[in-house]
Image (cartoon, rainbow, N blue to C red):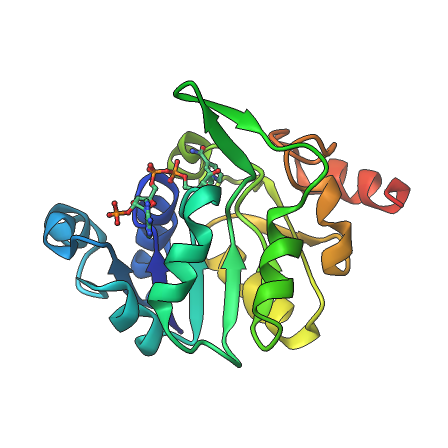
Length: 205
Ligand SMILES: NC(=O)c1ccc[n+]([C@@H]2O[C@H](COP(=O)([O-])OP(=O)(O)OC[C@H]3O[C@@H](n4cnc5c(N)ncnc54)[C@H](OP(=O)(O)O)[C@@H]3O)[C@@H](O)[C@H]2O)c1
């Protein structure tokens, strides 16, 4: 799979590296691509780096891992991404007096999907901290990783990418279900086994 990482920081760098090591072609991007030399070296032969527009043009799947408040700028820098799959890992926090504060009563993924209706938005990789992705991938008893979206084929692709990165995807339904997965929801920041996740998901309404 050709994956473009938009926001190659903690989350983007970590997940992109897991995918590159699993054999996917990963194009990391930055507003300053020259600073990604070490990341590309760590991720190995399947990784490269460039601008956000280059990564987006290259990709079948875009992994969005920027700050919530920079989403519009990052999406604009991608250019036309209609028809592509976009995995949204962002969480809706704003900086207030230099500290991240949760924005209540909104969903980052629903806001984004409304702005790019021709893009297949799947929410995933937002529920666990970077350190868990970095240190707990490919466990014998893999952690559940929740995802949701409105396009069945896009979700199947994302489920495979989740597995390739060393976790097990648990589908919680259409994108509207994302309220359970973003900050404030019961699935947010709660590492759990697949068995525990599968017990919990049917109780979500
Ligand atoms: N930290 C976690 O444990 C965690 C877990 C799950 C999800 N998330 C979510 O993932 C997102 C990224 O978090 P992070 O911890 O990975 O942050 P981070 O390490 O600070 O990385 C943020 C990235 O955003 C990019 N960026 C900043 N402003 C931008 C702009 N105006 N346009 C385009 N790109 C811009 C930066 O790229 P350049 O400066 O190189 O352009 C940087 O690589 C956030 O929405 C966060 O809520 C975080």
